[in-house]
Image 1 (tube, rainbow, N blue to C red):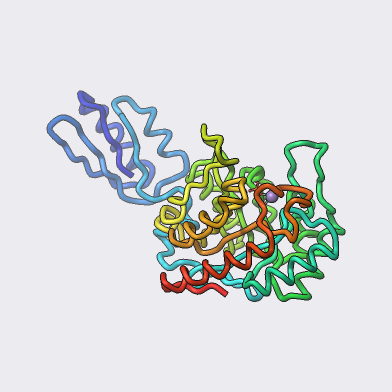
Image 2: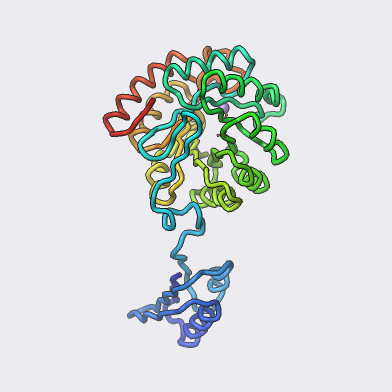
Amino acid sequence: MIVVMRPGSTSQNIDHVAETLRKNGLSPNTIVGTDRTVIAAVGKESEGLQQTLETLDGVEKVLPILAPYKMASREGHPEPSTIKVKSFVTGGQAIGVIAGPCSVEGRAEILEVAQEVKEAGATGLRGGAFKPRTSPYSFQGLKEKGLEFLAEAGKATGLAVFTEVMAPEHVAMVSHYSDVLQVGARNMQNYPLLEAVGAQPKPVLLKRGPSATMEEFLLAAEYILKMGNPNVMLCERGIRTFEDHTRFTLPLASVPYLHEKTHLPVVIDPSHGTGKSSLVKAMTLAAIAAGTDALILEVHPNPEKAVSDGYQTISTAAFRQLMNEARHLAQALGRKLN
Ligand code: PEP
Ligand code: MN
């Protein structure tokens, strides 16, 4: 880490910082500049040392050199990670496409939509059986029945099933029926839930909290990795800003930024990211251009009739068309889409 001293800090201040670093097993190198002194320390940074140093007299700021998210960081894992579940592949050349309704609404509906998105080229099927709804009066999901329908649709089509788990006590049940566990935006910092999905073997799709910073997002992923589950996908689904022309603001710079910082695959959600079905196609293509590893899209045979998020859902016909355009774009960029 690097300790930047305030202009005018005394030699006692500098010696005390160097001594504290030494006591914590680091080797300090003091660099005296014309108006300030910087101490570069080499060695393993212990928990809480940064905060301790920041309280010492004469210290202006402390800059850690290594990212605090050790396992998610690209520093210790330069190759991008790939995740493969059934026909769904992400990371590297392949772009995974997860499509399906916001909520599982019934057996016939999910079987139909699964068949249609599969034919259009999707490799994953989405659908919520446990729904985190803003209002307690809104449809809360079909729960275990919905999971059964999803599993049947997954089996019939070969698509990898993605579905949300909202509580640690549901993890075993949800992972029994699905292939990938989704941790929703509202639960990004539910640490007992992150630990519970980290302690089971199915891959996890972690959605960014709408007000979480990138560092908080990566540290949330770190909770899952630290429990022994290496298969984590990071999903940018839009953040809350002052803008109100879209439901959330979808920052596509997250894709190249995350690729710089982490080896974990990045997934973009243009449906929640815009909240408007008319904007989904352009943002899907833009996400591919930005280098996304996968996409998750809300698709329904009749979005007007969808029980949740219909306004941001595209029809199966629109999805087919979108996939055709996306395939051309992916090809032009040397990427692969089913
Ligand atoms: C969803 O995928 O339907 C969902 C609820 O997403 P988010 O957690 O991003 O709001
Ligand atoms: Mn939704």
